[in-house]
Length: 294
Image (cartoon, rainbow, N blue to C red; front, side, top):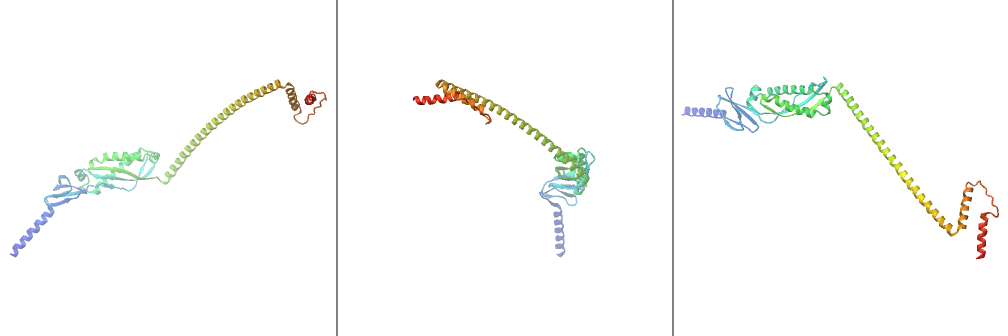
């Protein structure tokens, strides 16, 4: 009886072990392939509960999430043979389990990282080799990253992966090149500043010239208007004098004589000697006679 129970226990243990090895789970962050003595028989196994034949079948699981390759900064040479230190990273993921398993020496991430690093290194050498330092620094970095994403995506199509993104984190210049680039940039900024100052001076001169022209025109117009008004005033004055002469010719004659005396005595250094029977005294005598008659 004891021997029977022992045998049953052994058989139950064997069944449990077999079932434990026959059942496997692929979670939602994984993908898997099924192999039969090393040969791929099912290349795409989705997440869930699955069964296999122990010993006969082997399951290889891979990470289905987006992975990052962040390699060490590497030196690259530009078109003018200037050395730059570039720090970049790549976002990638597995898209073909069978190709990935074959090219990565049995699904080893380290082997795939080595292959991807080589492709990235080759791509960066090609991209920097056709660009100058000025191109890289002054605005072609976005274009460089875009070209790298496209070219790198094509170059890894045989590895069973796809490139999600490629980014350049930093581009460092050697000290001697940094000074050269700084001087070139400073010269360029100075040249641009001189051009802007020259344009400003030219515009200022144009504005000043236009303003001077406008002032001259305004002065001429004002002078013309002044002469017209003066002429109209003189005409009105002469009309008044003419009317006054018509009403009192003797007073008008006296007034004209007084104006003549005034002009002759301007300056204070001229003496005028008048005879008692001059027209001046005669006019006052006539005024007195008129008053006595009244």
